[in-house]
Length: 72
Image 1 (cartoon, rainbow, N blue to C red):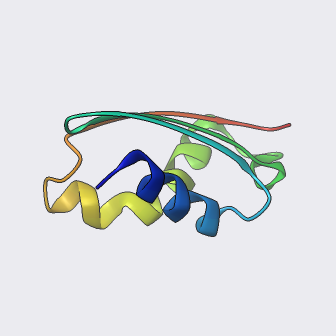
Image 2: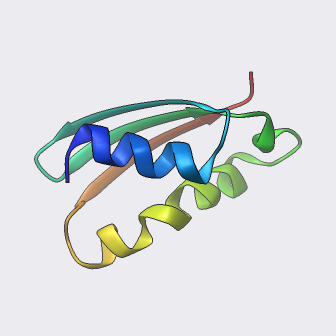
């Protein structure tokens, strides 16, 4: 899995969002800025970002995921 593939996956999950991915080995830092997060608590925001990544986390492709989910 590459940074561009992860960016594409998250961009499809959050249309119109600003997505930034920094991947180093199995560790990834993700920033998603989306109006979809408006009114959601931080944990709910992170759960929404984890959802499209769940398979990659479960199969060990991603070992550590750091998420910043923000509103514009």
